[in-house]
Image (cartoon, rainbow, N blue to C red):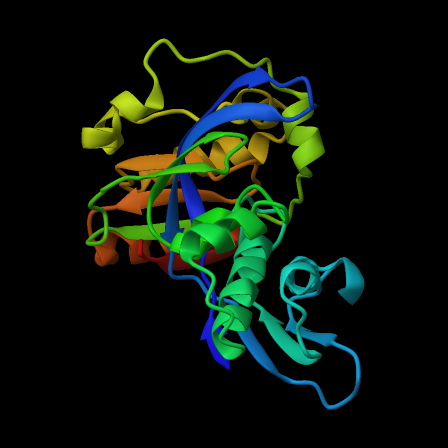
Length: 272
């Protein structure tokens, strides 16, 4: 079975409080986008499951990859035969785009279908939440308001499918620990969920930008350039380091891409 995974952008991200377990309560709107890794799962040639990666370098051994963690989590509930997994990495990591989380979630969905396990999306989302906070989004693969640790999802209708989204990923990696280490959690006066009727006009912030823009000025520069090039809304996605701009039409996004290429990897995509 071969599938094209997705990734996501965050429109607004409020870090509301630190939890006793060390995690944080957040509120964010997560929108899947059509930038894909390529995932293939086939019956194993040998007696153990394997993962082979291609494309962009993956900075972890196969046994620690979220794809293999997804296999093991499902195998605990429903013993699985061994499989060989082939993953072509295209979406950059440590970008705030959730590419690895999407790979894991799609792995669960594929295994569920391949072996006719019969788990519902809700059950798959529960399993995926044990792998990573962003994973449940990609089980549903539609815009969701995420609250709690990011795994409590509420479907949201946001009509930006006719817009073009320009992703800009500088040659910079920001760990989740570093990003959270610089924030002072506090709920917004106007909660994000009250903006969703016309969210782009509100231009909600990403709380990580407050300190990361100071530590990494290039991020602030890229955001300003996105607005200068005609973006109606621009933001860092998740904990970065990728930024995105939402444009009314593809022509303007293509023109912006030419300008922003100097800052690193760029890619134009669309909301799912």
